[in-house]
Length: 141
Image: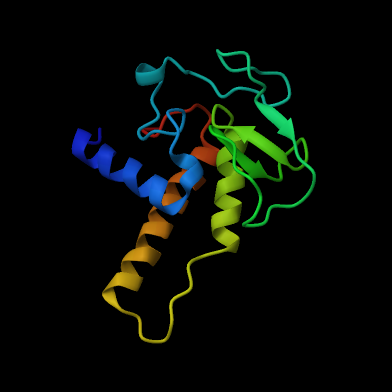
């Protein structure tokens, strides 16, 4: 299990690398015991505990100018382009794909600061990958 200080560090990293991850639904670590979630929600059928849909249809591809919605990731998924709630595995696949296709750019003089930016991006991307494959919403699996 991850220490509390490491979890706080990762959550700050999430928010700095991918602002949408500043959500209580995406906090590290995801565990069945911490949130009472023992399965992913189906984006086509599920609702949040507040009655919000787990998928909101969008109007096309993602660009940096695409508006964000709290607790959602925008991108392509099984229901088309739209906002996938962080209660769904699909939201993490959306973020992983976005991170994979748009890594940070480092110039030819690779400084320690630039290396940190790239390493932070890779660390968050790796967690998004694991979450997108997880059979249950649990970072320990």
